[in-house]
Length: 70
Image 1 (cartoon, rainbow, N blue to C red):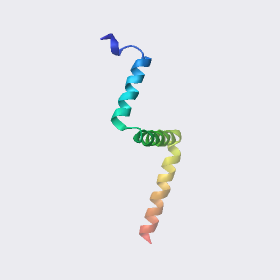
Image 2 (image 1 turned 135 degrees about the horizontal axis):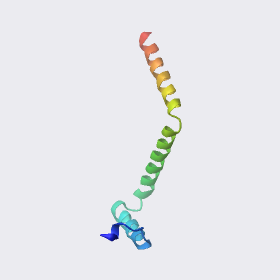
Image 3 (image 1 turned 60 degrees about the horizontal axis):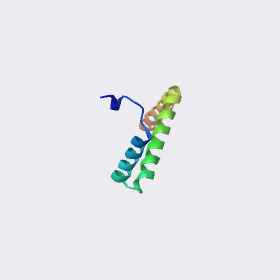
Image 4 (image 1 turned 90 degrees about the vertical axis):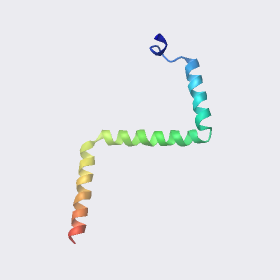
């Protein structure tokens, strides 16, 4: 039971990396990392300034209302 409670050692990291390589292959890993990076970047941008996002949403809603009224 204490196996899962400790720090991850170097052999565990090697095994995890080997499993990832076997599952996804060498060509898919850069695509996965790129997608992960863009997801993290979008999450950080969304959490930085929620008031700014609300203003952008309000502006886009007002533009849609104005377009539909014309």
